[in-house]
Image 1 (cartoon, rainbow, N blue to C red):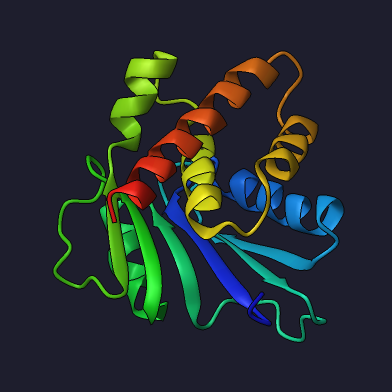
Image 2 (cartoon, rainbow, N blue to C red):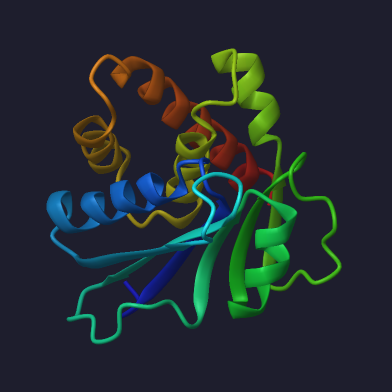
Length: 184
């Protein structure tokens, strides 16, 4: 593994991106014995304002907990895409939702535009779980943790009674990520 890999989930408050980051950090640290740190920030609004969750994963101790040269970014709003795209490395990967992000004029790195909202509506019946679908896509594309590790971390963090729903959401994300990898 590269000594330091930086991940950023970006969107708006209420989309569950902070939870997605926490689950990824848990999977790396608890189930795969890697060094991982998760940080978060969001606007003053509880819902609707800008939100980001960052995860750093490394085999070595992590000396600085903030992402500065992002390897993987998930963007679930146009505002977050525009706000954070400049931090993505030229060799980075950006995963954006096809409905929620439509202007890619500032894009950098490798861009994957995926119908995550559409998949959530069609396969889950609602958009709730979009964060977990995006997490599944990210894990599948990055390979940073195993499917088993992310599922274990997911089950420990989601509310009781929602385990099966979230397992289905992560599987949708794995499937979408696999399709992207197979087509590129």
